[in-house]
Each structure stands twice: as C-alpha cells, then as structure tokens.
Image (cartoon, rainbow, N blue to C red; front, side, top):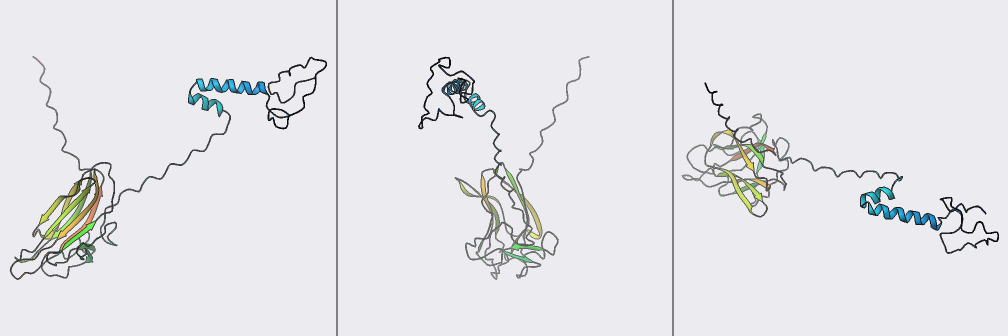
Length: 262
C-alpha cells in the first residue's frame, strides 16, 4: 500500500511490503493520526531543526522558526514632546506664565501708561502701543510671575526687557529679580535689580543651568521716604527663550610659526 499522505516527507510507512498489513484504526484522541495530520518522522525532523536553531543562538532560532511568516508591522514611535515655549510679548495674554499671587496682588497686563504718576513706562517695548505686564505701586507687596515646570537638555537663555522708573526722590522703587528652581536645591536668584533704573526699557539675559526645572520673575515693591509715595511700577515685556547658552569667548588664535632657519 502507498504511504499515507499525512507523512509529508513521502517516506514509506513501516510494513508496507508485508502482504498481511493490518489497517490501523485511527485514534480519536491522537492528533498525530488521520489524513492531513503530521506523522512522527516529520515531527522528529522539526525537533532536530529546532535544536539546531537553538544552537545558533536566539537570533538564529527566531530567524528559522519565523521564516516565511509575514513581517509584523513596525509600531509607530511615540510623538516627541512639543518644544518649550517660554517666549511672550503679552499682546494677547500672559502665554504660559501664571501668577500665583502670594500676597493677593497680581501682575497686571496693560497698554499705555500705568495709573500711578511718575513711575512706570508710557508704552510697551515692542511697538510703544502694545501690551506689557507691570506691578502696581503698592508698598511692601510681592509679585510673582511663574513658568510651568519643564526639563532642559542643556543650559538655556532667558531674555527679557524690563522698566524700573521712579520720578522724584522718594526712593520707593523696589527689586526685580529672576529666580530658577533646581530639583534638590530649591529656588535661587540668578539676576536682580534694585532702585530707579531710568525711564527706559532695558534688556537683560539670564543663563538657566541645565538642571533648572522652573523659573519666575519676582517684583517686590517698597514704601518710599519723604511723603511715603509708592512709585515702584516695575514692567516686563518681550520675554524670549533659547535652549542654547550664549556662545563662550572664542579661543585666542595660535601664535604664528617661527621663521625658517637661515
């Protein structure tokens, strides 16, 4: 009798030359018998191939076992986080900057002059007719404008324009400062100015260490002498941010080579 088609290798079944071959009753509980099933010699060859693949290492085994199967679709990479945006010209709102108002006083967004005379700018820095934020001249008041938490890959630069004008001699202009928060060490002051700086917008830049996780502008007003007028309207405008520190001083050129010998 010919070999049963379930032997995929085409090998003759044992006893096929015996004239009195007895038909083997198929077993209902054996997955290895019956038409279309794998026979034991074929399973043995698969097992030997698997052992050879394991001997080649995990990569060889995977290549052998999955040869001929369709390649799985590559999983899409997660989207990269959006770039950090700390820049703001205050024309529409205060952007990502928030005011926790520790003393109940807030940075005020306005245009034109501030309400208090002899202090504050007459217009914004950008165009002279746009918006900026400022601290109202209330004595002994603390104002804070804070960024959201962030993470830096390297040092960064925070640039801004500020206005600290006090007319007269009341000596009431307070202190404007920039503080940075670093995990493990808390808040530290990176830049500050105290007192009258003249009736003009001035520019400043602060280097944020790579370990910085948050930054804020602090304005602390104070009461003046004499009549006690509070003329400490401090203003901010055109904040910009760059994740690259300012370039360092270029190295000096090498000295010229000595003249050739005579």
